[in-house]
Image 1 (cartoon, helix red, strand yellow):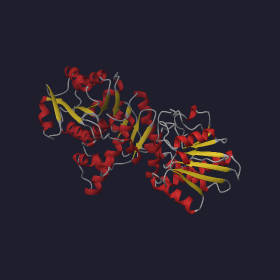
Image 2 (tube, rainbow, N blue to C red):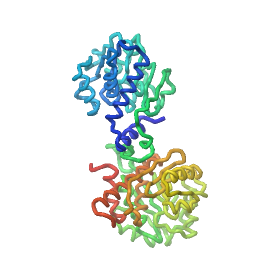
Image 3 (cartoon, helix red, strand yellow):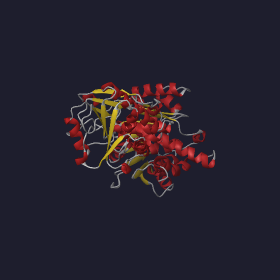
Image 4 (cartoon, helix red, strand yellow):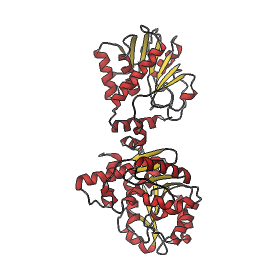
Length: 477
């Protein structure tokens, strides 16, 4: 089952893989036409009520496959307001071919006639809530018509995110949905058919540009609404926590703080005036520091734990204590990873090991990415946390769903790129599901590295990625 927003991601990922939406619309329309043929006989009349989105576009395509029938197409609204180029092209194709087409400008113009079948293609998976006019009047007319109703993808008025049905939703007799079933369809008193429209399995496996559609920023948001991140790192190393913190800022977090030993706090602060560094006593993380840091962590959306901490026994004991006291979301990286399998925590963890660190955690790996993906999924299920295992192909899994990222290049084996990835993951995990945060972060950081290498060649350093991350996440704009 896929929600409407998940389906939009899959559609765009398919386009990134070379299967464009126009091709999918043609396949969807053909599937609708097949469903029509199952319900009525050649020569019967079919009234298609199409909205101005791609859901309507699917039905416009279907009309071209129904020449043996008597199709009549009602477009709800003006053609110039059709939302996408491909739907507009299919409307133009019907007009040029002189199919029976009409425009419904307002509710008073809704007239279904006396068809043998009504096709509901008014609203698709991206719409929720009560129907607006003229769709509301058209839905009421469908319910009163002495003809079965075939809905395209979902009945108009069904919220494909949570499965709720508006009071004035279309009462469909049959639904033809695409690629996978949607929330709420199983509760309908209707026959539901899932049509294969040629979306490859790879569109759900590989992280592609469609996943970036999950990113959104409310224009009315205030400071802190887009995430506050606490980086706990530093001691033996100072660059790592600075890179993670700056990466979190570049990935859209509103506020990022670094908790670090007092012996290195000034040095970390010196990397950027954008950093907020809060010092604790001593030269490394120790168990005595945990209560105060845990209190500080509770005021943040995400903790990034590990960059530059080192692997001293006292530090690892403190990491274990800190993880045991957290109940939010934490991204665990570097030396801190090795304590994760044995820790008892209520926190939601995203672990970002490279393959050597994965082995130290107790996991297995393989040179074959398909085998590695299966091994990572199994280990993620065993430890009960999300894994982002870095490699030529990054593997992200929560033990249930697994994704594979293919961006990145050999130039990114340089030190510090993992710290950037941890910071980006931390920022995204403040506003995204952990699995999505890890997948998007892997894709964006790899894409940033590809952009740097394309411009400058190999020899990139981790700080080069910081400037490239925003474009990788949100494009030129």
